[in-house]
Image (cartoon, rainbow, N blue to C red; front, top):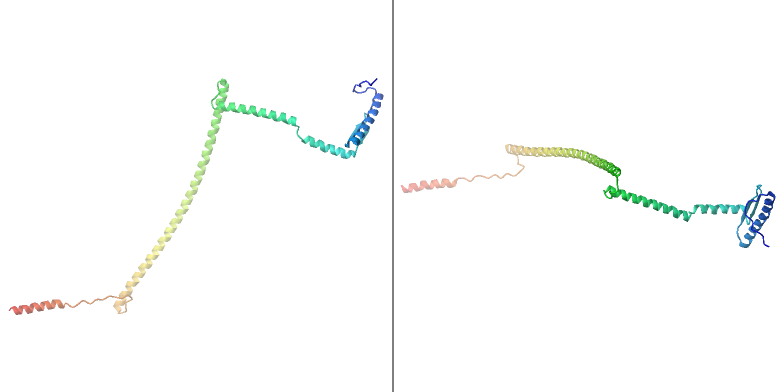
Length: 239
């Protein structure tokens, strides 16, 4: 006749509980040792009794087994759970889908479409929203235009200053040119006066002239005298 099935629950009798603990503890330690030998596995077993007494078994070193256990546990804790990740991303996708649908409906309403199901309050809220949007757009537009006007005024002031500087430079150059022309004309007038004075002095004092003079002597009027003599001679012959 085989053994009956034992109900797994706390044994109320302390003596029976202690006997059972001793038997099963020895069997558990034996099984752990056999498992490490037969399967070449690293096995570590720690047991605390109800009185706080420690029983342990380690196929190699309990410290190395505990360190390895902690490392593997940390690696597993860092690895994402595929099932939970799938549920999380599915929830995120559903939330984004709802947001996209809401934004599309809001956009159509702003365009004046699909307004048949809206109440007076909804239409009033939509109108207020559009007015606020238009106000914000106008303010932004005015700000941009104001900034552009300020920039153009600044550039205009800079160009005005540059024109003033250029005008000063042109005036300075014109004054320099006028001074140079005055000096040139003064030098030419002095040279001409000196030349005339030198020629006059040379003629009056009999000095040689610095430039050649073409002097021509007038021919004697012999032709007229001969004509008059011939007339007198002809008159004498007529008498």
